[in-house]
Length: 189
Image (cartoon, rainbow, N blue to C red; front, top):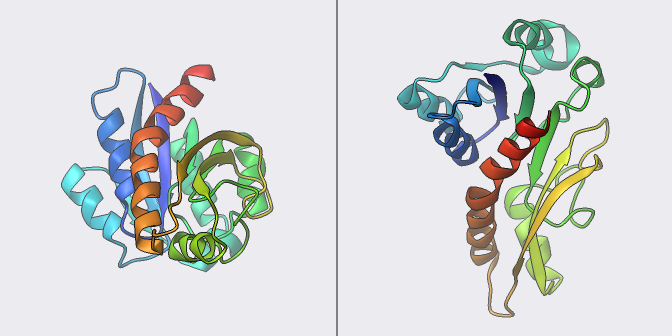
């Protein structure tokens, strides 16, 4: 059975979707969720879904081996960043090479980089009158949103769409595609 660890910073809808998708799977399961936000709603979701969840601070994540040691013990086949806002430390990436992926709410390379997440992305898409946007699932490297692209899905942006409308379209793409892409990645390893 393949083991998945999810990192999240906020509400955890993508984490919940992944947990539910793999709940009855014979091939993989979400064994742990880690968050940098002790007040993140993802912790409540994990409690309801009976999945181990822990919060950590910046010191434990990037200035010590605390989070790395948790990961070593958990021994994940795949680490998924699902709305996780901190840059992943290189020393963790080196230990889990080609095992860390992220979902980004835009068609990279557009609207990527530091500070480009959530509504910041959707506002920029609308302000720039983009005719389309979408999601990108990619490997994580030492730079924000620059790892190799695994999958993209697109949606149209209408001239009448607000940033909230775009956010809803992106959320639908995430819910539809993310678990299947993760399953494909795990099955190819």
